[in-house]
Image (cartoon, rainbow, N blue to C red; front, side):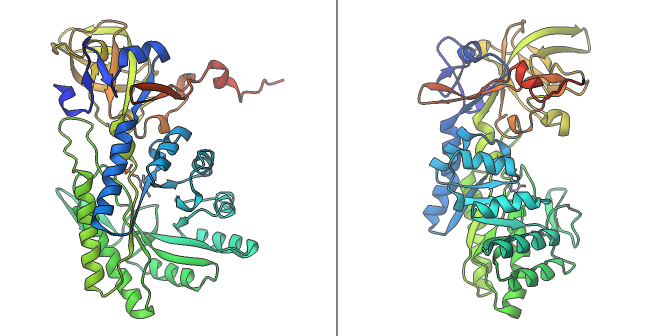
Length: 435
Ligand SMILES: *Cc1c(COP(=O)(O)O)cnc(C)c1O
């Protein structure tokens, strides 16, 4: 049963319930496609990380990587849960300011931050900029000097950690657009520039090694690689970092085959390696920062669609088309991401058929799921796709001039619209007639 491994139930009329609310009722009230978030799951995910650090008694910041799903309502929940926040653009920073997110807990990322973006971050006195390259160091120094201000900065490095079959290995030179290379002296050069800047407070290192990781081993390896570099700087310049940021990438369950670790296990193992390395090199324990995105928002989100046309190709495949697709969830088309779902109005019925779910965009690649077991499907059934809370709405597009779908939050038996469905007026609002 697909519902056995997703955090939702069947209600007494045999429909899918999301946070206790009938999904079919939500589809009638708000229309489809519709993103629905169970806010209690978002909160539980946040608390798992935060409370484990608290129980361990170590100083830490859990920063939600808002690119996974950013909206005013979402950031209000993240603020209530006491997390910090990562932004990678002026638009994400602007959204955080609209949500009145505490500026000192906002961190800015990006491999090509513009002078405008950096100036906005500096004007609002955000907590930290994660510097990515030499050009950016120059820009930050110039802005800080001109404004006579200071800024906390972390240095993003590429520790060269890559998956090698079932193990992670350290490669000397990582081929990545992000960060300073540790192996070839770039990070050492950046260290001197940051340390010698009067306006920059260099707080420590950052690395983000990947996404959808099911084991802690890659993080442990990254921590060791970072400490080796920090130990060099400690020996040579008596430098000790205030912060070690190990990034995000904690894996979640999309399908039955995915076996994510409990987030508290990640936190315990990361903390253990940082404690061990700091003790080994005789350095003070830095504050540990992590940046989960998908792990906060992913499993809390469900997308509801209405089934339209059904095309049966005997002996080949049955295509069931829904009223959304790659415009609201590009991940299957972009990188063959796998999902599971159920018919929300037939959630209590046994699966008898196998169908593939097609989006309605004019692209053969616009498929949402292959070979989904379902009870007999009919037009107007409501399809619910699980674990769409991360990189769904945030990657949505207007391809084929589809208006963007609406987002609803449910919590404590209540549902509330938090992002309006776009109208056709929204679709053409920036168009200018050619005279
Ligand atoms: C994308 C990203 C994250 C979040 O990744 P998830 O896989 O969603 O946890 C965290 N930190 C940085 C720097 C990122 O680019």
